[in-house]
Image 1: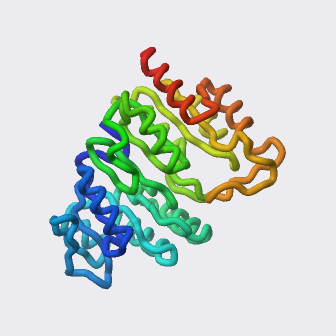
Image 2: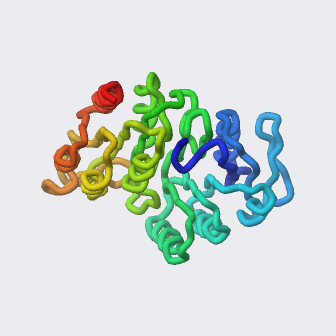
Amino acid sequence: MAIFLDNSSRIIVQGITGSEGHKHARRMLAAGANIVGGVNARKAGQSVDLDGQSRPVFGSVAEAMAETGANVTVLFVPPAFAKDAVIEAVDAGIELAVVITEGIPVHDAAAFWAYACSAGNTTRIVGPNCPGVISPGRSNAGIIPADITESGRIGVVSKSGTLTYQLMYELRDIGISTAVGIGGDPIIGTTHIDAIAAFQDDPDTDVIVMIGEIGGDAEERAADYIASHVTKPVVGYVAGFTAPEGKTMGHAGAIISGSAGTADAKKHALETAGVRVGKTPSEAAELARELYKQL
């Protein structure tokens, strides 16, 4: 098994005719993902060539779902149009919407997330500003490189795209069940807790790796959840141990003030919950390897 994404996933790409959407649709297809079409209302009825394989372009997500049975959409829609594109996917009732787009205004992200919640819809939103979801050897929805690891028994959830890739690569000897890049924007859909809960229930995930960063309290909330609900071993890493106080850091606008939101405070909360925390990504990978070998 895997979480959120597996070899039964049928994927459409919103923005498949754009340069980024087309490029990554080709990469996903090459990685074994079942790309069944794309969406662009202005180019409905046309088709796109994905390295010799033709895929149809539909006028809407609902039409694409009706024609192909798609249950996953990956969005490479420009920031100005992303809110409407996500709402369209939610209205269509698709199971999973992976929002890759970076630079979506916070009020737009708040609007489409509030809409999804108020609609009572079951659409899972991952992102925005995220690398996507990959279940190696099964499927790939997003921009995560598919050739840096193998299918295995470790689940990864991360705010950072590049740190997702590093941990996947460093743990390639064991392999990854699923890696979920949740994104580091102030407002996101799927959280650390959501992914950790899914990994806890996944019989093919033995060890969970959680990657966080300074700012906010998401990691502390995850620590509370782990202490109460998670029996599998969890390893953590928090980016930003050397971040200066009061200075905005990184694309997510992470900021710390006093003891709130610091890497040390998050490390303490996680360790109190029984999570082994590495001071570096490599140390976190080694801790995960040790825990896996003890099972």
